[in-house]
Image (cartoon, rainbow, N blue to C red):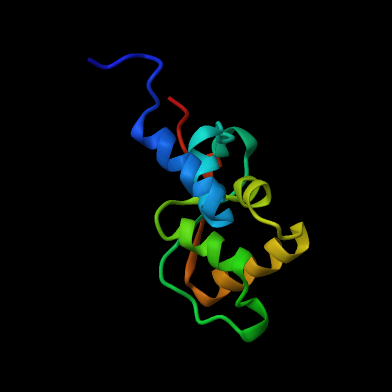
Length: 115
């Protein structure tokens, strides 16, 4: 019989992942926090279309983590700021470059119907 006090498999795995990997903590923490509503904040939404060929100075863990998440779902600038260790200028420059290369699609949510 299942009891309410028994931890779930997800809970046990998330605890293990937190003890063993800071990357897993950043990914798992996204499941536990409420994400800001992209349309409410008016911030652009970014979707990875294809994996970019990054210059050497951009081959860093924070950028790879961001791109990894973007490969599975769109994110907004607010999410990137909250979940990366990058500075706002660095994020803006990176996103602008990726959009210019055509590997990231920038979507303006203001045109979406909220109903």
